[in-house]
Image (cartoon, rainbow, N blue to C red; front, side):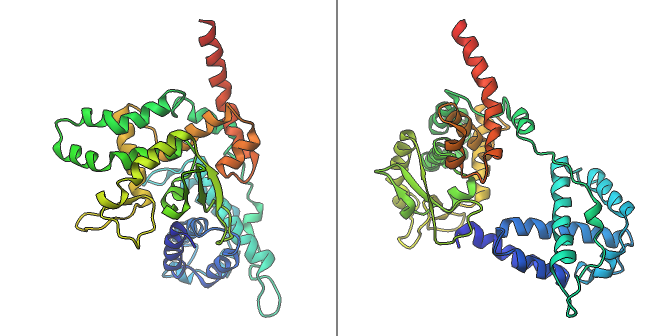
Length: 359
């Protein structure tokens, strides 16, 4: 099991024991098919739902662990409607339509399992009445809508190289009066530029970047071997190719990975950092990489840029030169439906390119 999955599995094991026994049974049932990350989101969604049930008096349980199947059977449509309103208007911050749809889908999966798959000792369904079967969940995450939200918020054409150049040189100029920021930048600029370059030249996800080991890197053939999302075969790594630009940045970083970060031989991680108060290089976390990209994005004048938008930036650029099926394979998408986002994004890119040529 790779690094991110191990972390998510540990968190899942910690959280699932706070759930009723039938949820724990459902999670065990789903473990062979879904990633620990997905199941962790399920558990968080159930925690929100059960907490709401108890607050509304729809469950008499003293804790979420004690919510009963009978209480779920007794729910009415107005209860589910009330929950949807709560998700939309709760004070801590209203959920987006996509988030609400996902939370309801999580509930539907649980209720379906309890009413159609799981059995009691007499071979009867655990849940005799499934209120969630009556709930229609409209699809809100359409490729065209996603593309509309991304337009103007990703890097295009020369900006891909300019952003890498900014990490290497431009950021230091902006921070010339901040000695602490300058020192940190001088220590990490090659590594940070390499991470951004690798995403912008291969389309890797942040979790895939985190999980990379030195042994996964083949500089001669410009390929990395990666555990891809949705692949439950723990022994197979997919080959993912990257462009020449990333090869140069990887070579620059590899020259200093061991000495600058005092990385011990036992540390397999490709991208390392020296945590505060420690002396040896250790694997970077997903949160550290996300924060790093956001820091540079703000200085670059693109504060909405994130790691995932760098992936979108690569995908849009790649799609302009390849078909939807090659783009799907490069990005590791499960279906071309997800990849359709870039068809909508490149409509605008192509039209603007035509106008520039006319001028």
